[in-house]
Length: 269
Ligand code: 15L
Image (tube, rainbow, N blue to C red; front, side, top):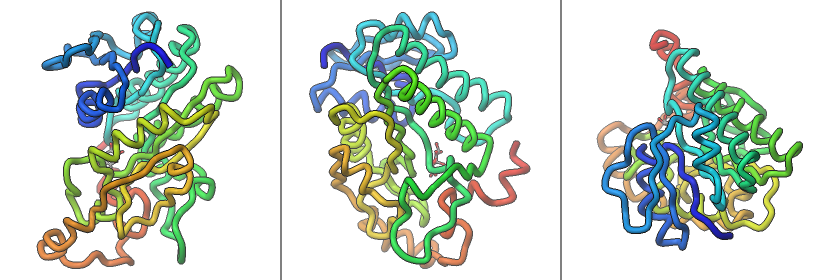
C-alpha cells in the first residue's frame, strides 16, 4: 500500500502509542485531532479537524492508504455527547474513506459493545458468540460503529476491521485488567496486523494481550496475523497483594464490561 495511514484521535491514549509505533512497522502516519498534536515526529503529517466534519475528514483521507479511527468519546457520557462523537463520527470516517477511495478502515470498537455478556462456563469467549450486549451508551455507540463498518464492507466493498479493545494502558491498572490488558506494544502489533492482512473484508476481533487470565478468544485476531507478545500476569502479584484474588462471582470479573455493567454507571450519566 502507498500513502500514509490517517490516524484519527491521534492525540489520545492509543493514538499516542500508535504515532510512535506504526512508523517502526513501516507505516507513514497522518495524525488528525481536534487540536494540533504535540511534537510531531519526522515525516509525520498533521491535520487539525473534527471527524464529524465530513468535508474536512474527506480532505484528510485523500491519498491515505488506510484509516485507523480512534477519535471519539472513550468512556460513558451523555447520549448527546456519545452519539454525536462516536456514531456520527464513525459514519463520517467511513463515508470519508469511501469518498476518498481509501480501501481499508480499522475501527476502535470496544469490549463494552458486548459488556453484559457473561463469561462462558468453560473455554474462551468467541467473537461470533457475542451478539451486541452493550453495557452503556458508550457501548451502544461501539455496536453502531461495528454495524456501520459492516454496511460499508458489504455495500461498498471496504475492508473494515473492528478491534474490540480491552484495557489499553502502559500497565494493567486493575485486577480486571489482568484479563483485559492490551499492552502498548501489542496495540501496535494488532493495528499493524489489521492494516496488513490480505483482503480481510469485515472482521471483528478482540484486542487484548496474551494474558494468562484472559478469557476472550484470540483466534480471530491471530488469523489476521496478530502475535501478542505481552502477558499481564507479570503484574499479578502486586495487584493481588493490593486487592486480593479476583472473585469469579463478582460481576466485574464475570461480565465482559466489568465495572461498566454496575448500577453506579446509571448515576454518572
Ligand atoms: C474502553 O473501551 C474504554 O475506552 C476505556 O476507558 C476502558 O474502560 C476500557 O474500555 C476497559 O474496558 O478497561
